[in-house]
Image 1 (tube, rainbow, N blue to C red):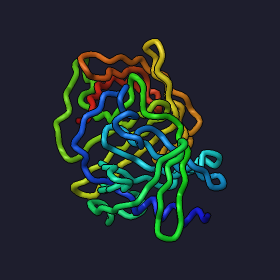
Image 2 (cartoon, rainbow, N blue to C red; image 1 turned 135 degrees about the vertical axis):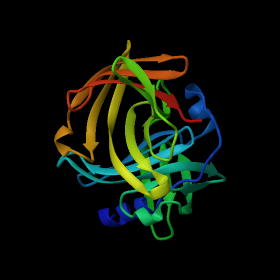
Image 3 (cartoon, rainbow, N blue to C red; image 1 turned 90 degrees about the vertical axis):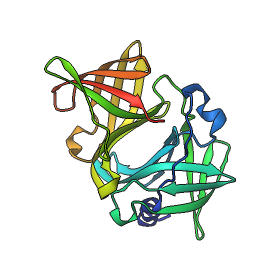
Image 4 (cartoon, helix red, strand yellow; image 1 turned 45 degrees about the vertical axis):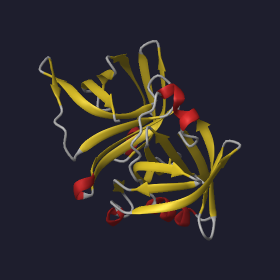
Length: 242
């Protein structure tokens, strides 16, 4: 399996809207692809997160602290076919807005994408359950002691969390804009949310860092505060995308 061929296939993938809302505890029961998946080729790691009808696939080299690519958007899985419609694609922005149907099989904790001339096989990392599992969009930030709500618009910052992995993306699908991403593993215990960064498109020097924040769910919103990767005070509110 050649890395360039795999990356090219991932760049083709995108997603179509699935108008559904999931309870975090029921992701796996209602959607067998929900959760995080991973495969490796040499030093490159390939990951997918499928949650709340949205997906993001990424390629990165943690050993050499190199971000390779990411693409994603809404998805639908039906009758063994993954229908995709891209909201962002760092390999080829002209593919934003396009859709593709890929036959897939899911069994024995494996997710296989059956392309016409080869297959890509991912291993399950988790089934998308957890208190923070979901597709979150930032909805407000603390400024001068007050929470300032974000105005809804085409530009958005999303953070997808499975049971064990996270990835955020800053995008504007209307203009095929991509402004940054980062991801890795996370834990959420006793009000402490910790991110372990495995890739960061803007600054690879942050790979390997762990950041801990105060976190809580209040009235359906995720309150997230602490210090950013730059060491700056951060106080944000995120809401689930439905």
